[in-house]
Image (cartoon, rainbow, N blue to C red; front, side, top):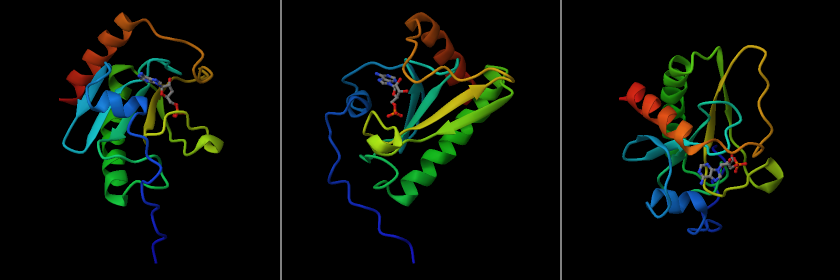
Length: 147
Ligand code: AMP
């Protein structure tokens, strides 16, 4: 039997990603469909670091519907394949943090898709703010590869 998914009673509609999804805050968008949305992380741990979100409110892995989770992972795979080519990456790291103890800072579920190069370590989380002009150019390239 599948374990019960916790209802999204703890979802805060004022979280920063909810505001991005509503268009109240800007982002460097790379992909959108009816159920998912993706943009670049403004503090990338490697060039091309992207975030994939469900459009439906979900705090994290513990309350997202299995169908929305499956869709987010499909989109993460699409983005991984495009990013590998656009950034000439040797590999991809996926990350998803749930609750503060799990490392989560923003409480709308997101999957990190991070292009990796051989022998290049990830920057520490939130250690470097990328130039918005660089993010714009990278987002255009990724969005074009995802079309
Ligand atoms: P976490 O909840 O631990 O997965 O971390 C949240 C991630 O969101 C971090 O990698 C931040 O750099 C990133 N982040 C925070 N604010 C923004 C924003 N306005 N646009 C894009 N990425 C963001």
